[in-house]
Amino acid sequence: MKKINELKNNWLFLGALFLFLAVAIGAFGAHGLTKLLSGKAMATFKTGVTYHFYHGFALLIVGLCQSHGELSGIDPSPSLKRAGAFFTAGILLFSFNCYLYALTKVKFLAMIVPLGGFAFLIGWSFLIVNFYKRKS
Image (cartoon, rainbow, N blue to C red):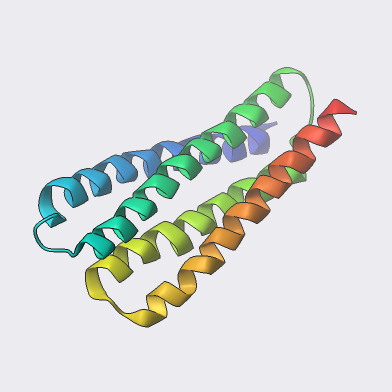
């Protein structure tokens, strides 16, 4: 039972941490970078922040689903754990590379961004699988 609580709390902790960072990074971009970056670079930065927010909330959903399952006496689904892992990877690969690319213009960073987008899609797929299995 302790291991379930630790995993759930990790997703809730990571979700809250990533949402905190999204606010801080978004504010930094809005107040500190608008005069330094081109319009296109600023748009890339904002896209990173937007997806950072979405998937921070997705991590909270994963943690809350595990909490709900625990309260119902249901073992945590491996699909939830995988969804959380892919959402985390997506934030790191997509959002953080959007930030770095907007700031540095290093082309290699832009080539990593789609991997993060793919990780987001896989994460959502695992969440769909989790909900589908719980429905049946």
